[in-house]
Image (cartoon, rainbow, N blue to C red; front, side, top):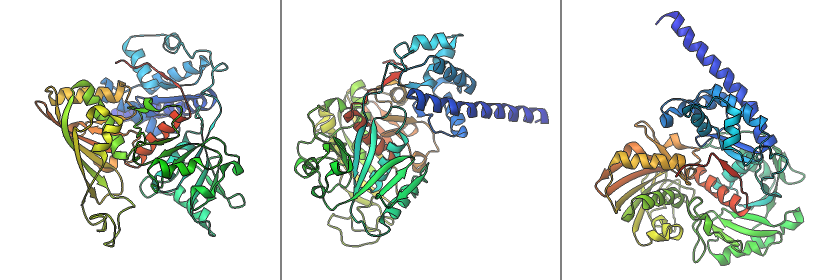
Length: 485
């Protein structure tokens, strides 16, 4: 290879890098000034690095056959700002590929047609009214990730405002410890931002968000109105109470409007998997469950399959990372096998995910069985769906349908798709989808199929919980482009 050829590659890279750097202030202006949340085929663009932006543009080749030109995206974002748009979620990747493939030459005219509902609506449209107070009851693995996500989404038209966290304790140094756990995470890495400890007000100031810490041993000990909190959504991520009676204790507290449980609910509680049955949420529902991480991972995929092919029956085997409920070393545990050392063993245990499917997808009631194996990894799990369908399908057709569902269906935020022979569990840490179909592993033989679905059982699930909170807060944002069905 000649020196000239090498220089050409480097020059092309540096040009793309410079354009990607120019995209960052445009993305930020749209987000903070216009409440426009931009994405690129579902991948968020807000608060992303130059390298991440370039990689996501290159990723488009897996969908459209060629990577998306960062210069085209720059032209699109500049034209979008000139349109003075109202709040929306806009997938600039989809719009950019459409502009190129249809042979348009006037970007502003193209966007005026595609985004007609929000053009020149910046001063007339609001993203949905006053902010919604949120309280986290508990600050463990899920609680801290929920805090990270809500702080990240505090701009861009989000109504959710994390006002307080309720924990036990209160001894000297407790607040510093809580801040440290939020700041550093062995699985998800460092927090992207700043955290200040305000000992005088028992609060953390996280990227400018004032979050009060309230120390209490039970819901009965708290009156949120004393802290200026009104009509709050309380997210119980302790798992101590799982039924309406126990969770109802939160509703007796001053300042609480609704309660959301981050675990499968018992009794008649609605178990909500966002993207599938969130339409079942009624205005008078005061206690809801966001189901389990496994239920969120498999239900969207099962719905997609049932809608297209019909599911006769099947078995769900969950290969799940160990959790804080298990022991580090062999010791007494009330649950069967869970007393054995989690980092040293695969532990066969039960899962209620197969039965829980019926709460979110009643048409599959009684059609699935399930079991689980806890394995020595700290995060990212897998569900293996062994199913009989109503009609035969081959591997390529099945994968193409699931790939389509991950990009264009109403469940595109819940279903992701990967087609690589080299991916392993750590590649999915931080994935925001409820589940990721591994296309390379798909097996299809007549009407029998086996699907392998990865999921970040911590972060992906937390993203689903936040989506339910946004629904409860009645946050309605227009989405563009309107996906084809």
